[in-house]
Image 1 (cartoon, rainbow, N blue to C red):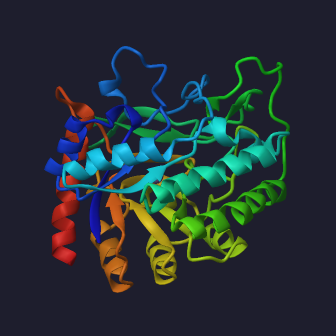
Image 2 (tube, rainbow, N blue to C red):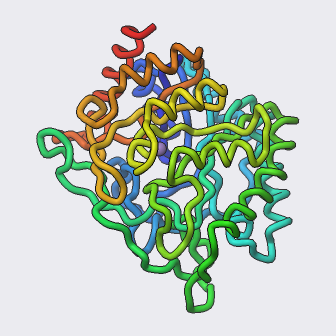
Length: 354
Ligand SMILES: [Mn+2]
């Protein structure tokens, strides 16, 4: 197992690579989508967006991330003695019509395939994604973690429909006509997913890239009047079985899985690591179940994190763990302190279990 660290787009620079290395990371997972483009003044305090009415902001241009751009980032990361393990998330501008079954679906599918090929050519082994219409939405922040540390939670679901021009909680078309997304069934969502996975996996196989699916955060059966794909642990099996391939894998988010109302986090970890389906792990902890839960420090939640590591070790999991989210700590650098705390815990826990 390897200790990794996740960096948002605005953090892709030497100081953040140093910070990750100082925290004990050997591998990085990076976001190429800029969720904080609208936060012009102080991105340093940017954490995971909670995603309220206006969403996380504007989607990008939909242009491919080129092999050259990706390779340059990778080289810079390698100079710091780190490996680039994964890109996390497509830009909604690249695939809104794949998610929404819109008129540009086939064209955008070609873009996604080329994006995965570019990632493979740049020598990056994993691509994380989240097949979701509403995306991450409807969460709240408050002093939920130990010592009143500010963290994210959920207190009841929200059915406010998604406005036209928005998907995955980002705006891809400012000029979309008034109105909201039409309601669709679970089966329609799975049909759209099947189209995506059937088409992306051959490109991923050719390119040596593992596609890694994040479950729905928050994991509720419907959100904003849209169905959700993976909101219970067993739905991960359906996702895997939709397109059997060594490249059809999971971005295994412990926090989200623990928030699910069915199943058992240890059984799920055993089931999917035994199948060698876990590409990488979001190693974080929570208290409660959707739609009422709180994200907390890694050592104070419902999950016995050492037990998880022992299961992963038993099943010879050799991938990367990253902290995903953490509560903010009360100091001059709340996000950084929270992350450094999680990384220290993870490094020690991995040494104990190794
Ligand atoms: Mn996650």
